[in-house]
Image 1: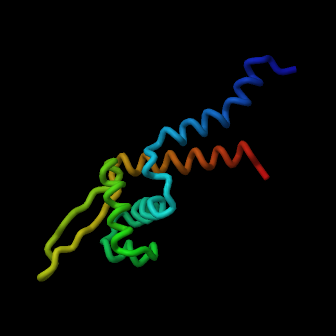
Image 2: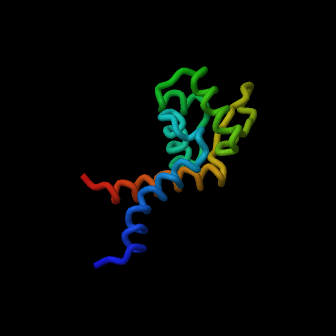
Length: 116
């Protein structure tokens, strides 16, 4: 039979994973913000109009989400002059990469702990 510590460890693993998930920046727990982070994770960078188009959200909503993510230093912006316009490109930071990878890693582990 299992010792008490093995049983406790087994039953605490899902709790530990959930706790780790909840220790991530709370700003991440929004579908549009996750979408922004996933796009930047895969693309490396994207400009404002491209993000708005890909996510299907208004420029105002996108600006609000990007501001929230930037305030936690999960994304940063770069401005560059392109002909007569200023183009703003967003990139995921090292902190953002770590946070989104941790989020998905924890979610994968949680799904393994609670199979259907």
